[in-house]
Picture 1: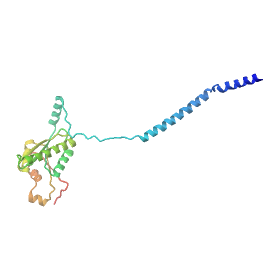
Picture 2: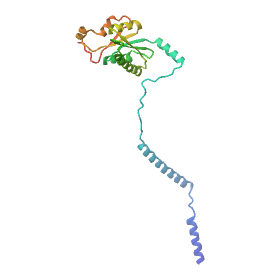
Picture 3: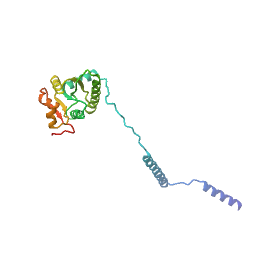
Picture 4: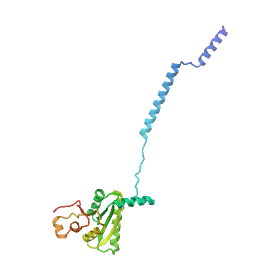
Amino acid sequence: MRSQKLDEAATKEEEEEKPAVLTMSEKSEELLTTTRRRERGNAIEMETLDEEVEYNWKEVVLPALIPVVQEPVQIERENRERRRGRDILVAVDHRPNSRHALHWALVHLCRLADTLHLIHVVTNVEDEIEYEVTQRLMDSLAVEAFQIAMLRPQARVLEGDVGKVICREAERLKPAAVVVGSRGRGRIQRALQGSVSEYCLYHCKAAPVIIVPGKGYSAF
């Protein structure tokens, strides 16, 4: 009797220790459940990471002019393109209306193959202070010309009467157009004091003259 009880207890322990045998359908269902749990867990982690990501950025300030060492073939090609281009003459000074006229020419008139000529007329080219001020003006306008129209202009400082000098330079260059800015003075002021733009309009025979009105222009 005692041996029978011991045998039954041993059999029960073996059944408890024996691993459960799953059918194929039960295994598939368990595997599918485990996969879904992992997918849900990964999705939760991915959503959390996407919400916490922060993008750090800095604006890169590019140089105004980038010197490029060109090959001889490229230089020859650019020279041919410039030979097919036009000469554009723009008279500039230190007034805002002059800068406005230059910007208008760069946007509406100049092409990439054109040669832009900037001229500024002074009373005395030997005055070092006046020349340095003019040099800074030309440097600033050259940077703007490159930024707006990708042009590297040629600049000259000349001495004499403004209107006459502009007409003389037009005779020398034979440009496609001469661009001058208007000072924004009314008709009465122009009649009393004269106007450089009107002088060029009536006396320049070498090229058409384009007068760009200033922002504060008035007809009277």
